[in-house]
Length: 510
Ligand SMILES: [Zn+2]
Image (tube, rainbow, N blue to C red; front, side, top):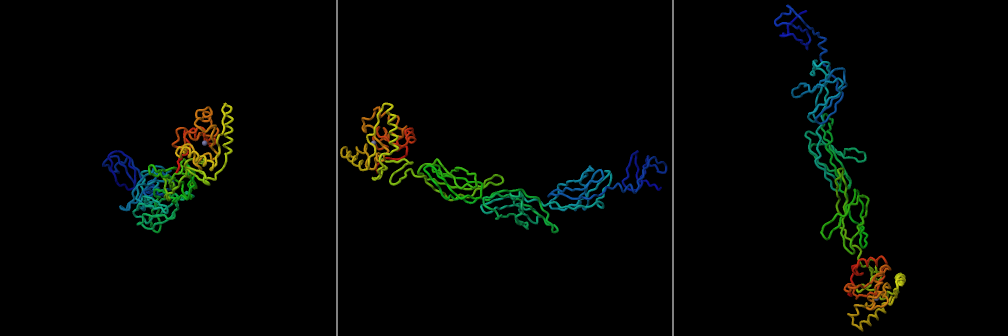
């Protein structure tokens, strides 16, 4: 055996050989090995080769724009060492030691996007084993993904949606994806094959529909596209179509608006407030198929203005509004309805100094009013009161002669305070009657008191109450009652108003 001194140590120690060959360990400084060797170890060339780690095969890699996760099949060993090739120094750099034999993956982060990296993985038995990445192991190449673009804005009108994204340096192009609510997947809708275009308008959209978009960038290397992850998501809704009010039904106090439904989530109804001179949001109809809405509690014979717009909610619950159609003006039914020359206010036949009856209107005494009187008459009798009709229905011609007699006797101004001109008498309606004694002597009698206290319960009112002459046009007539039906008579009595006040009408000769 040929001995060669390669190392001198000053104290007893153990040195482990790391290169092939033989090591002599001497026990004293300056000693010649031939003079006295106390301990030695020999490293054989075969044993030395086993001290190198084994390069193993990376089976696959997951990647993002700044990280790679390498996968391999675990082997019998005590751990793994990971190397990456540094292209600038042209050397393999150890970046990690995985001290687990069962490890089968390792993630390398902090990488540059869209860049090719080379890796090697070694399995070691002893941590003292040497790796030799430059000439051993198998190289695994993988490129990181490009940086994902950022979606900057998404805007929509009623015909299109426009998307804008950030430029990705080095990208070959971009692809736009739109969410398909049916399949729950993002579908590629367009490919932008340059790095100069960062906006795109989707004209394949429908009004009143919600959309979600994402974008990817890609880098083409050797004919293969390297795709980024998805960008952030932006959502919007294309504005619903304009709503035009097509018509309205109306009553005295309500209006029902009609329109054509559109694709949307619902409708907002606005009414113009003539007091504040502002449009006021009345209600939201949360039903896309609604085509009408009724607004009640309105004033009679009053003009109202309405407008409607549809809305669509996007994926983030933000509403997108369509346009208002033109303003729709509608007037509630007038207070006064005239049929065949006869005036009705809220269905109540009116004859007073403002509203007259045709000369040929000759209905006779109203049978319903007569039945109500007879019922009242019986009730009064039970209370010891006698009631009788001293004047009921009067024809136009009879009233004419009656009035003319009063004018001749008292003059027109005086006559007009207690007698109606022809056509203006309530007696011509067949709904009015004078009780017992049509003169001031009736006032204060037991019958007058009973009548005032009870007539509403039988559908009558004292038509010309005390203190209301300026409104009714007639002096107080405690004997003159008018049939309205129980419900209306009680409502008028309860209001404390005379009929003209109750119906908001006048009684004045034109
Ligand atoms: Zn009368």
